[in-house]
Length: 304
Image (cartoon, rainbow, N blue to C red; front, side, top):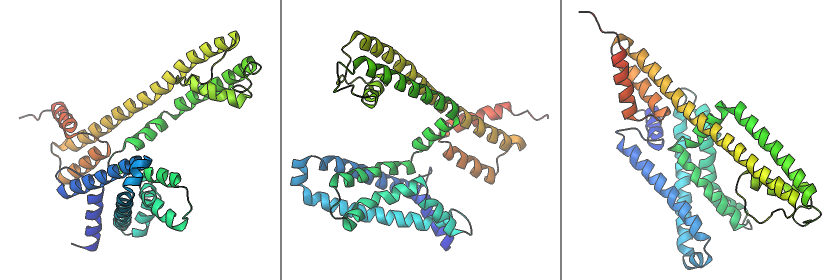
């Protein structure tokens, strides 16, 4: 195998596994299991008694984890040179500044920050270690899909946020004037009232701050009603965006499949292209099989 082919194979192994690639599946399992153990470890470390009893074990595990994630990061960085033919440095730069690249770098940051800044608050380091949960993005496009869906419906989403902003400013201002003389400790300013407004509009309602005047209670009821409407609007926009994105991907894949079937057969290059598209769109093999059967039925029958 050539140097470039080794890079490409390494990249395939480290990225989300494909069907039939046993080595890549094992690699995915090991990394995912390691990330989960790290997150579980960070959670357990917040229990003072547990952390005091197993302090040495936690330290050894964290040191081993740092070594593991550091090796993984530099291996991915090296393999990224195969992303762009003839321009290894561009592939590596793209990886370094990509979302996954920044997450992979952040996974090792706490250990080295502790060495460089010994007095750094342990709580800060624990928060940074929890960034490792985003390493799952190597194996799932959920976060990318969310941002992509919201971006596709950005005009409607911005309009809903605008309505929410108006509701927050309006209700917090009214509540301030209605309650400030009766509860100066809780509604002493409009920023104080904004906390109550956000909690009420998002239908959380902690109950730690509540109106005592008649006017304040009327405002609270109106705010709660507006909150139900605005939250339902935002939820509907995101849900609709996801549904539209899934439908759009299916349409694109079916269109490519029909194009490939125009001559009655799918050659090797077309097969590779369709498989790459299937993986990128997170379509199951069962869905693809259904599309294929449907496309075959729609093919014009050849005259004898």
